[in-house]
Length: 245
Image 1 (cartoon, rainbow, N blue to C red):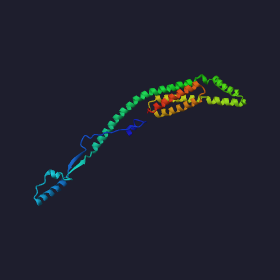
Image 2 (cartoon, rainbow, N blue to C red):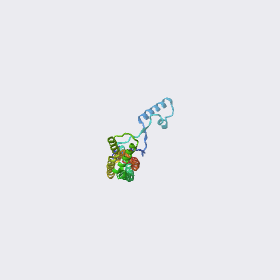
Image 3 (spheres, rainbow, N blue to C red):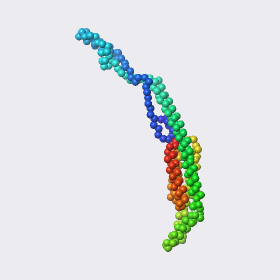
Image 4 (cartoon, helix red, strand yellow):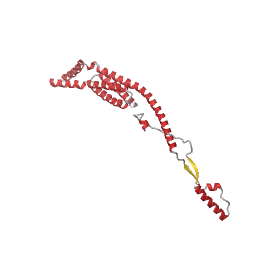
């Protein structure tokens, strides 16, 4: 656990261990005390009955004369085995770290391109002609004209207040500022050599929140289209950063 934790900070690592013993797992031992007692008993039986002396194979087949016992490792053998396990574990972890580093280089390019695309789409919304004062006035003027055409009795002062509220709700300036700030933070994380996966994951959630708000507030088809494209790129980024340490 310490070896793994010292190398990797994100993700789940499973380790499988196979051990092959070079020597036997057990050995046969002669219980000399039991053999002595059995031999004496066999001799006494032979004296009493005149039977032939007991054969060696017969004596050895008696339970307890031969014992099969597990081999007990010495402290030195146990220490050597543990050291061998750690050595092979480090070799495996080195290979895993190398593979993750190679994958990280590829993901770095992918995520960097996605962040650049987010920045590009944010800039398109920021510079969209639909966000100019004249364009906003035109949209609000058209809406007011439709209301007036209905013949409803509308208070000019109240109508002005409603127009101001519509313009305020349609303003995406704050969302654009936060998106630009998140882009800079993401680029800073990608430029650093330390683990950034969790922070990038958090930024992806923030990107998604701003993209959703921007799209919902869009009062122009062009801005709405850019917002939808932005959400798509953010979703793709969220998938990729799950694989980044």
